[in-house]
Length: 375
Image (cartoon, rainbow, N blue to C red; front, side, top):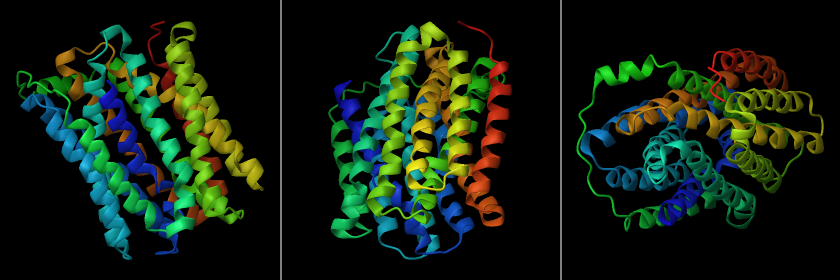
């Protein structure tokens, strides 16, 4: 558990240390929000493409460690590619490699959840998300300082070093080979028709769409327009992640008290409020309320929706189910910056936040109503 936790800390640190200033860094290469959104969307696109096959392959071969080692290492490779190019194509390739790397989260979640009894899978998801978020908080907090210290490329090189550390943490873990389980089309079809699997999966897709439009997307662009420095841009993302941790604590400690469905309703309500704050913010002080509220929303909703999507799935099918869950919600990570970049280029950044807020609230609440009351 300790080795997995440390590996997760440094792996997601490597993925996020350059994220706060990545949108504005891309703007220095292409002064077009639609192209910025295109490059940012590659991270989600390749996660959507790789996560389900990775979950299937892990079950098929009966091994997890090889996929983890390669996946964690690629986060460093992608960072180095982005640091070494000035072309949009090169930046898109580097961001794509980091997206493929992030597919390892499927295997990490499944490997960690097997250390817990089935009835504690939501708690396991919340705990691992907590470690994940802690790594991202620490690294995004120092991102702006690194840029001031060594230039815009330094965080990318630091990311490569963090990726190496995460790989070294995985290597000593004992990973005995499990009986290989051949991929089953019928199993995949069965999962795709299970309401308890697919409803929380699509709800997480909506949530991730909003997240990659705001805190991990164009919120730092708006902050820069309002006069934010590199350090302040980093603080926007760090603030978001700090409140994700608080939301994780709420999710892990209050699910039994309030019930999963009520927490999901609350998470979408908070998401709407946070995005509307961004839509109307006219000062940096007001803008900082947005990552606070959105962070609470994601911190509460993400682990609950991820946990209930595999809660009643047999252990032999969990890797495929988690791969399916993460592959589908990665569509939101791809579509969010891709679509919102085009919309923002047409109607403006803040009107785009308002339109997105209304759409996500409508989809989130209507979908949550369909979840069977399991409390």
